[in-house]
Length: 472
Image 1 (cartoon, rainbow, N blue to C red):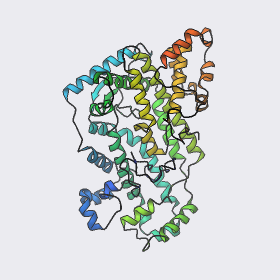
Image 2 (cartoon, rainbow, N blue to C red):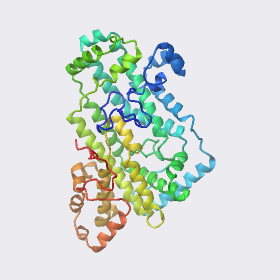
Image 3 (cartoon, rainbow, N blue to C red):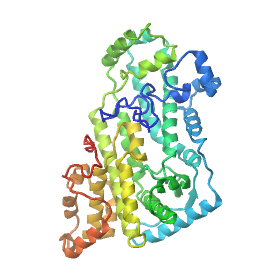
Image 4 (cartoon, rainbow, N blue to C red):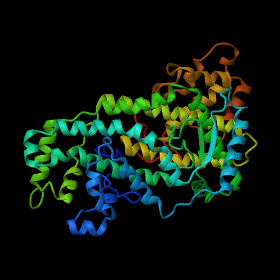
């Protein structure tokens, strides 16, 4: 996925990756307008007409009034990316997914007191995933985009408005198109990778719906020397565990959404800095600035002068979001490890593959880097898994799961720095002292999770320099 944050968001926090084209990204196409205009670099209207089949609908796109993101364009762009490799699901795949999720739920009954959260099971194609999750993406992204567009429009100095001519008036419509184009690119790439409905750590499917994407499950299995049924069941366990958590922790969905929206509320624009930047950017353009030239307009918007500075409020929101997602993923890792036990011989290898997928920039990490500039790092996930594994070993699964009864009971970001200290402060009685049996149980529950001393630096070459978790 693109390393460029969507819309007018913050740049990638890794300086070595700024300007990198990434996986199909284009350094000169910061807002994904290549999907709209047929490629980076703009060009004359004649060139655009020749490159872009959708150009005939430009007037329709420019008249979008459904919100800050042009979701019609986003959907069109994502589906056009998926068209070539799209494979509809078969009746056999539907049956296999249903059976895997049914068995996964039975195994999880022995690992957690949280009851099943699954009301229906489905096998989705990539296009199905896109269509079914668009409402959730809209609820998540619209407040961010609305805040960005409003901040940019209100902060544009009068002098800059005079210089830019129609730019100020076009900001809302162009912003909606730019957001739509880039969100469509991001979701199209994401649909190529996700294996379940909760693969990004968020509940994107309709409530009670558990889903696997068989085409992507096959791609995930490539290179793994494990049977197809085993891989499918491992992923079904993860999906079913996520569903239990989101179904029976009623405040969790809203807390995750609130963390993203708190980031949006913290967006602040320095009008003086924008004015200076616009004057410098427009003055440095060869031949001057023409707001009706798509290439010049895109060059201006991609110059960085409109990027809002990150505020302390945003840093706090990002830290909370990072912590919540890590706690969700860590709990799922530990519960799935306990449920799989000796039933799933390849669990250790599959769990390691999933961990490395996250460490190298899997769907969740890349999506949130695109949305809010947040890089989720595996060290936070290891720390969260350490908390849940140690809670199970010392206090039992019931005490572990009771921490989800209220957000104030959960470990904080500071607690994840010293996870075993947090566990030691929980409860009273004989379970408070780790004896030999407790240590054995902890080792069993965390086998294959690659848990390390949180104070240790990167190991095994999995984390590159600069991979420290975001601390705010």
